[in-house]
Image (cartoon, rainbow, N blue to C red; front, top):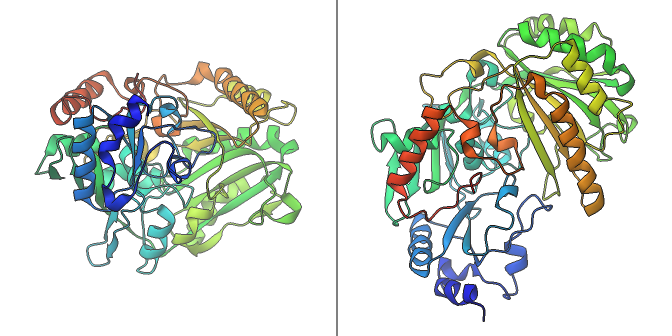
Length: 455
C-alpha cells in the first residue's frame, strides 16, 4: 500500500461508504470529471450527501495530512490536473436539495443541483435564474465564479443575486454567510471562486420572467467577413435589454442541430431580448438586415434558454481558453477571422465573442468580490477533442486566436472560462485579491482547500 493509500484509508466508512480509494472497484468512475480530457488521480474520492458528512470528511482529511478539492460537475477543473495526489476529491453531486419560493422569487439550491434542473423548477412558477448556456453546469460552482447569463447585460452577474450561502469551513464548523452574518466570507464567495470552504447550499433571487424572445441567426461561414463587423458595431451600442454572442462554429452532428446545418462551418448570433415582441424586433432589425439563412428568434419559455447554445450535454473532452477584450475595431475583427475564420484551418469547434457591457460593466451594489467584468467582449476559444494529437492542435489553435486579439485585451481574466493554469490574482484588481487572500487565511489558516488557479 502506498503512503497516500495509507493516509486516505482513514476516510473509509465515511459518507455512508461513498468513499473510493485507488484500487477500489468504483474509483476510476468516481474520479472522472465532466471534462473527460482531464485526468484526476486523487488520494480518495468522497461523495457526501449532507453537511455533517462534509464536515466528517474535512476533519478526517485534515488529521490524515491530506488537502481537499471540492468539485461539483468538474466542468472547469483542468487546472487541478496532476495536483490531487495528496488530496481528497470531494464531489458534491449527492447534495440535491432544490426549492423555489414563488412569493419571494428566490431559490434554495444544494451543491449538486444542475442549472437544467433549476430552470425547469423555476419555470413552473414563471421564474428564471441567471443561468449559463449549458443545462448540466452546476449551480453552485457557476455562482461562486460570477456567472454570465443570457440576461447579464440587464441583470449583472449571478453571484450578485446571492442572498445566503451555507458553508462548511475547514475546521468542520457550519456557518451561514449573509450580508449581516459572516459578511467577509459572504463577500468573498460571491465571485471569488472556491477555496474558502465547502458551499453546501446557496439562496438567490430569481427573475419574474415566464417567457423571453430568444433564438439564433445563422449564416454560412463564407459570410463572416460581412456579418462580424456589423455585429461588432451593433453590440457596443445595443440597449441592455439584449444579450448576445457571436460564434464562428463548426456545427456538430447532433439531433439538436437542424440537418441541413450539421457539420457545416457557420456564423451564429444567438441571445435573448427582454421586453415586448415589438421591442425585440426593433433591437434585432440591424442583424436581420444581413439576411440570415436561418432565424429562430421568437417568444419562448424562459426555461428553454439553457439549451439555446446547443452545447454538449453529458461528460465530454474539452478545452477552453478565454480573454476579456476592451474593444473590437476593424483590425481586431480581421485578426479574429484570420485565426478562426473560413480560411484559417482552425480546429476550434467554437471561436466565440460574448457581448458584455451594460450592467456587467458597472459595480453592482449587491456585488461581492467580482461585481463587474471590465471590457466589451469575452473572447472564448473552445474545442471538444478526445484524440491526444488533435487535442494538442486544438490548444495551439486556441492560443493562436487569443494571441491574435491580444492587442485589444484588457489584461484581466474571467477565470471560470479558462482551462489553463493562471494566477487567481489575474481575475481581480490588486486590492480585491489582497482582501480575498485575507479572508482565505482567516477561514482556512492551514490551507486545507486547494486553490483552483494558484500554484
